[in-house]
Image (tube, rainbow, N blue to C red; front, side):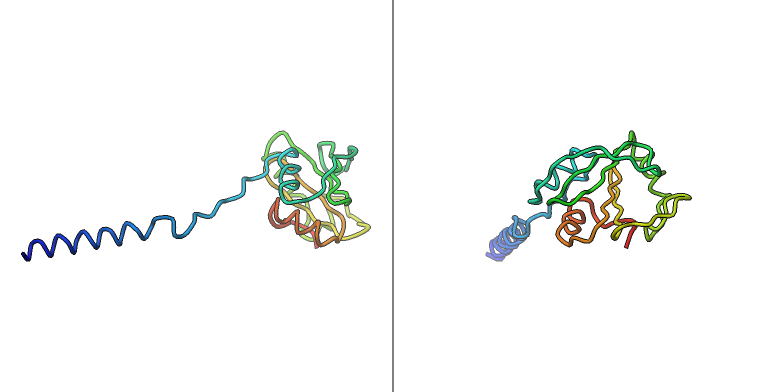
Length: 146
């Protein structure tokens, strides 16, 4: 009889333990890392932004020709590199406050915000809080700027 009680107790304990991990707490999903301009555009659209790819743009302090991506009507510059290492090398030249890039001292028309992920470096010069929120959501926190 005592053996039967021990067996039932173990069975009950095993049942309780197995129910504890049965999906009561969903596993958080991690957003995929944006690697390139196409992923950036897709991420913005998935976040509910109105996105339009515009003209090309040249900044003397970045090697690749950039692309204007209008995010909710605001110009965001995207520079796509051949490799993440090449992007990181140029990103390292941006001052923490965005006031200079390499030896070039900048006089911005509005507040600069620099982002980087994967193979892209993104520059938004503006202060639209909705655009900034979208950029933070899709790219993570800015690495330089004010």
